Image 1 (cartoon, each protein chain N blue to C red):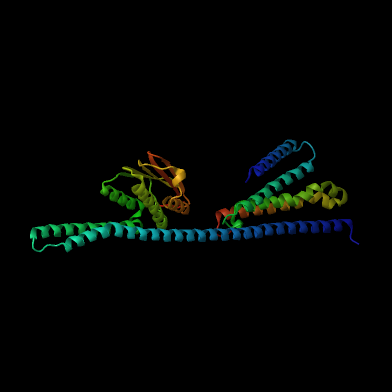
Image 2: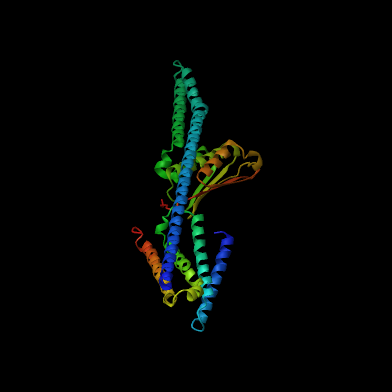
Length: 133
Length: 266
């Protein structure tokens, strides 16, 4: 990874940590701020894109489907990119959609979390049972 | 007409399916593109391997050619001369003067004996068998003994670190490099002391060859065939070559050859 990418990586990391700390501090004090959640997901997606960029730069002989980082990053990008519209369009959904949907919209996001954990389990299996992965 | 709730759910399901589809396509594309790049990477490695093998073969042919030249020169200049002298003695054999005949016979026998020894030394020094069977250290010890025997040089050969096995081809090329260095010292350096030190590190093998000869100006003589051969062979082993020479003070040649990652100690 070159120095520019390292700088970008550091910046994204710092932003993510700051947002996470902000959310942690404000948790329960006020209504959740969805704009910050959007920003957080964008940062996480940025991290993941950097990973993909990096694996394309440093191609090795390893099968990518047996690499735990690939599954972890895919899980994270899956959750952050797919839940992004739900956070971003939250106010639109609340105004335009019937209460049945708008009140339960984050249940779908929870399904994405479950799928993300399935990706993590796959990553773990790659490490513990490399021949089956 | 659908009610707003059903319409919303349909819209949501379509949206989620679309997002999932985009994600799956993204991952499939990443894997596909990565595999493509990986295949190109494997092809590059294969090409590099083939070109390295070709270079190795080329170098072996050059070494062989040089060996033939050395044999031819040695036979012509040394063994041939001795045998001619022995023949001369035998031609002048005098049956009438038995005492003189005895001396001539003894001289001839001594000269033929020397020629046989020279032939056997030549055969051993040119053969790669000693390296393949006993490794480079033993082969270099043999070279050291040969030079000591000549009585012209004070030679010091030492090894430090933990010696490791190298591929026989690598050892052979390395041995020929050192032989070339020694040849250069014997022929051109007018040295009296030769020091060779081998050091095995975790990552590389370094070989230092020093002499106290007349040295040379690096800019003038670096284009000599001998040095070019040394450089070419060092490149072949992916090694580094450093030549330091000061006129009237001697020459120091340092070789650094990377060691394989999965190495076994000798």
